[in-house]
Image (cartoon, rainbow, N blue to C red; front, top):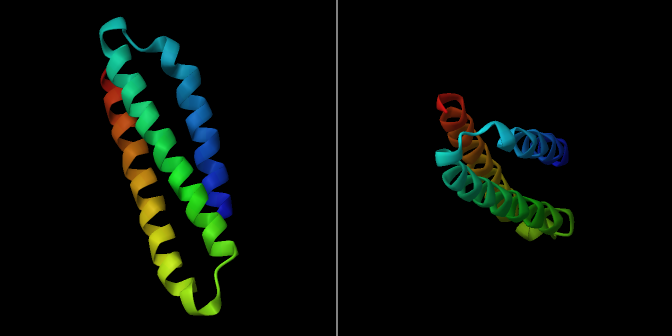
Length: 87
């Protein structure tokens, strides 16, 4: 999980670097999508911290929430990449 989040951190940095290449009319939408991606990354990092400190009893539930957060992060990244390739 931690490795996956580090990978997303690198992808996020790459996307931020490519922001200058986005056409002017698409920048506002791109920036909004990036903010959403950053929120999802923060949520996933929060879940990872919870998972690390979870008791054995709550571990399964938090693990499922972590998996969901990673899935949402993946989905948002793919959404941005598909839109960015079109601009």
